[in-house]
Image (cartoon, one colour):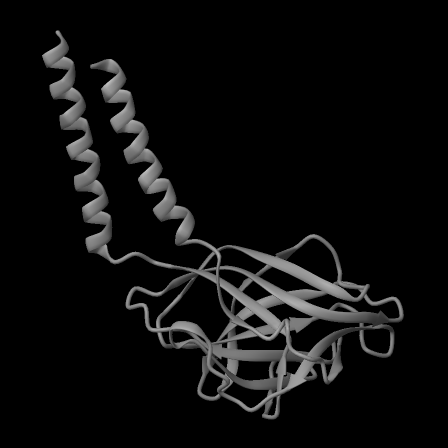
Length: 217
């Protein structure tokens, strides 16, 4: 009976682990594998924002990470920063959080920036904003872009929006015709009914184990 109890526990645990793993790190939007048409300088006086709209999961998403495809920096650039902004009217407005990266993207390549769990609402526009502590004249990072129309759709209702630029992070202009090369990874937030089902499953497991123990005694 003890062996049976352990087997039931192991199967149930494995089931929930599989559900949890499958729910994580979904790549919802990406232009990383597309041909690069150029790169734009990023500095303290050259902010760039690439907007996107989230999918239709009713309870929203958790933003896990952002990947950027960069060209080699020009000069001694430093203090690269990636943030997520929401919108006020047509323009990026509030910094919702700064992402964490292991190093400044001074060499050409793919760079990953993670979050501590930023929540995204469903069917809502957001903007990935990059800047740096050095001005372009001192040294600039270079973010790759591809030529593509606005609204290039992706999975589960997510799609790209306009891109933006600013010389101070406050006053923005919007443009179309390019999408900066990045990938957006997220996790759908389960509906309350899903949490309830998992809780009932846990209670059922405990009752089964309790019954098996009484039977073996």
